[in-house]
Length: 583
Image (cartoon, rainbow, N blue to C red):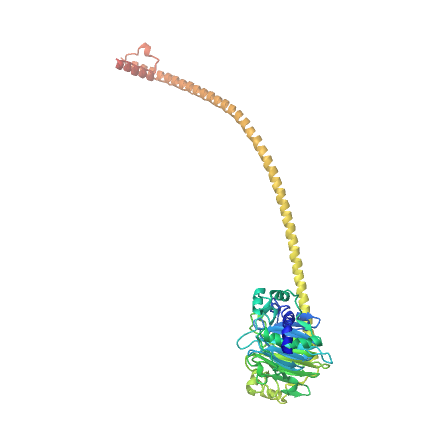
């Protein structure tokens, strides 16, 4: 067997263990973005980044940012590798456009037609990796021992968009450890105990150190592993980077320079919606007021400090409070990120004692041409002077004077502009703080009143409960007393009933006696009246008889009839008649 083949055969298992142990273990970044805070508009300071990995040999942090509540979100990551370190292989889920800020190294990635590519990285390089590739990054051991710092944005494409639910990339271990051991064993055609030894190993950090000997051996064996076990032939083809320091700026004067990288300049950007820009402002300078008509701008401060002014495009007729548009001022420093939505005029200014350098990722599906308010390329200067004057409510002469001294500068001197913006910002912050304190005091007063009202309500409730318990107790006592009184009254009524019965009986007897007495008295009176009438009639009869006697010949009454009344006689006649009829 040839020495080289013998080496490969004898190293077969060793290579597999080494590569899979290093490459297939770690933390899955597909879960990093779940429930991650998304910053909306304005400024995201460096200390607000979320740490994804933090090891002895490097770290990775990220932010999720969007230009508005309803705008798409953008994912940025910040890689820092110590000299002679390796960011282990990951599967890329979205196009990755990145800028090398400091240090040097190398990036290796797979390609669709098979095999791998690699390219050296140095400061100022701009590069793009396509979604679906597997890549890793290694940093060089330089004499200056500079750290390799990379700022990356994971971009949308014409066909797909970045999906936060699966993250920007995932460790290769997710492609292997997600399967059962038996499936992995059948796929790799190796003994099961070897697979168990690999899958049961403690996770390896995402960034590891590679000393010179192991570093060299690892990359020598890497080609074998990718070729034999991942089905990817390795080769030495190199990709090309775009270095901004090798290009002439689009604009430059004593106040600074700017450079924009479009799809025309960097062919690999085709198929993405990402552009790139770099701005360098000297002390006391300003990138003039402008806006992006088709792109949102996400900028990262590389050096220095400065002020950014953003003007709301339309602050009126905005009923949606969530989407409230407002003017913004904020101070930026190295490592900060700020975002400016499309159609929002902005200006960036450096302080009198410091420069300001920032890079920007611009998001647009088509070419974006910034529109400047001032200068010979001013969009306002292209309008009719009379129409423009009418719009501002001034004369044509005033408009002519406004544009009289315009030149081609988009970057100009602006001494103390940043300082004035900061003064106004602090004044606004002071007023907002006072308003906030006042609102907090009002809120505290409302809370105090609510608490006092609750206490009073609770006290009233307790008093009410106490009164109710007292009333219930009194009601029970009254009920018992009433019940006793009712029983006593019932007893009295029973006793009184018996007495009343006796009284009633006596009363009835007395009434009967009185009635009898009245009847007797009435009978006596009636008897007296009858006797009186008889006497009267007897007297009249005597007079009549006497009168007849005097007139002559009237037979006198029988003696026995004398003195009897007419009624008695009539009664006797009736009785006699009755007696006769009975026979």
